[in-house]
Length: 403
Image 1 (cartoon, rainbow, N blue to C red):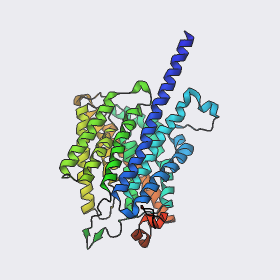
Image 2 (image 1 turned 135 degrees about the vertical axis):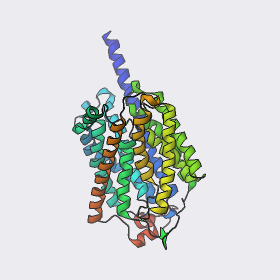
Image 3 (image 1 turned 90 degrees about the vertical axis):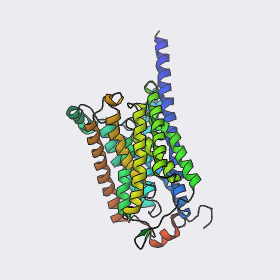
Image 4 (image 1 turned 180 degrees about the horizontal axis):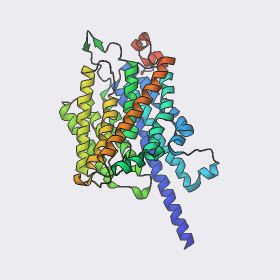
């Protein structure tokens, strides 16, 4: 009997490790989606830079999260022997890998907002501070109960802040940090002439579409495998993710008047929004959440481009991740309630306060980190380098392999 119990425990442990490893790989693959989404949106002279940024940001994020960020969030270090680390089939290591791919999404989000005019190393170093300190600080508050904030919300409003897969913890933080960086950078040269907007059309719609598809597919690992153990898998999360994605596509198509840029970002808006409540919403509630998110992104991005001349957000990461992530966290408190067919256990006020806390931490952290970098080394390329493009100015090569 003891032998059977041991075998069952081993099977459960190895299954959980494999499950979360597959999730980590799927979210890791999403970074290719971030890369191609940016490559397809920026002008040809900045395509190489987009690819390089996503790769190097990921590498730096892995290092700082391994040595600093994960300890800040969860109080766990990896300085034990390999014998200790390999216990339970190395589940704790794979859990780190999974959560690190979430952390690395922060600079990938920021990258899209600051594209085409940012220096390389200053932005890379800034990303290290965001992933190593700012992001895990808020991550630990929400997902590990650090500093008693969740306990206070529960005692005050009857429920803790609920963010199953990171609408605000990951996407909201990334989007609002990006807003700070975008404001400090200023607009691209040539963006406005005589006070009128000059539209920089996407350089490659097929690449943009490829990036959107890769992200959509990987998102099911992002959401479903946030359960982190095999016995926590829920088909509700999968279907809610699907419905939110569809809702985002439909409203972006209608409001965006068939524009391919909006149509391929619409599903991403819906998926960002549903992360928080994907485990507790009814599928119709998820559809509504995604539909609102698709509309929010389309309307806000258009408004920013036409009216906010000081905010040059190239890929629209603030409305897509910052605003839609915030909406999703609040929506979890609406459509996650039993009165809207959800599973309950959430409080609208707790969701609102938690969302505002995330926005505040992201903005303070973003302005502090990028403001310090701007003061020390500057954030922007020179006017000449920006005119020549980041590919030649930084990497000495164009997307065709020629200088």
